Length: 196
Length: 196
Image (tube, rainbow over all chains, first blue to last red; front, side, top):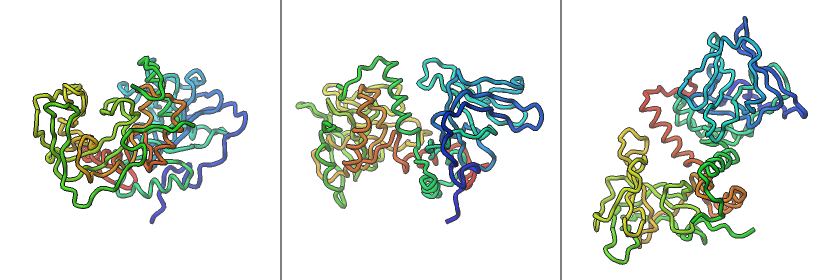
């Protein structure tokens, strides 16, 4: 069986653990000139490999690597004029550099969305060391929608497990529970151990 | 830790394996008079515990138990006049007995939907023996949306695993891959091991 490439940044292992007391870093686009810069305060959360069709990934990668940060901890600090929203109708508006195409951050505008307050970023765009490594894989089956061979999915999931990235076809159980809890709160659902 | 009740039909185990050469059976609603009857040819597929908010479940159950059958193998054979669609706007139209409330079958009308061709049924409504037992658990986190306590989810997932029902927060990987493959075919996406 040929080795399955998940993403160039983790094909040889997900890398070192998050640095203790990491204070944040800067994401930069791939342009050689007038790089867009985005500053993040503190550590990211829920970093993971993502197979969805919308997240940015390097050419040839099966998966994106994407993490969440509080929107209050993110600021565009250089060349903001180069940013353009990829799809204004998407729930997550992805702000990409119009020149090199890299997505600098994704933001949810709908205050009623269960994940409102999180921005989504690719810490591989930062030269800073100490970011948390990815911890699981989400939307794995969705890589088929981008053209991956369905017959290869067993090998893909096996490789993700080998890398320590438990594969899920949606988000991870803690995140799915969090989303369901937010939805239950929004609908005013009473919490009982056994619903009527 | 109190024992977690998943569904009365499987709380003591999922039951015997599917009967070989099972030829099908009849589902009946819970009315004492003029029961709605639905005849199924052959065995069901993908039977599973489902935590979604829309599937029918007995009072007090955390999960529904639901399976797929080909729409060509399903026929309403008695008292069809009692059936009413629960939510005409849902993707799966659930035909329920207007008198007792039990869902007799769910059907997808959209021929472009990846699961078009499957009807969804609850084989616990059949007095016939030999149906396949449930094989996994889907939409587990969604029980929170019906009022289940988020703090209890670890116990719920542990109990599902104990019953041999691997818990997923969407459908199982084979079904998720199937859906993604249908979507890829519909979009005319070429299949490559590594998408560009």
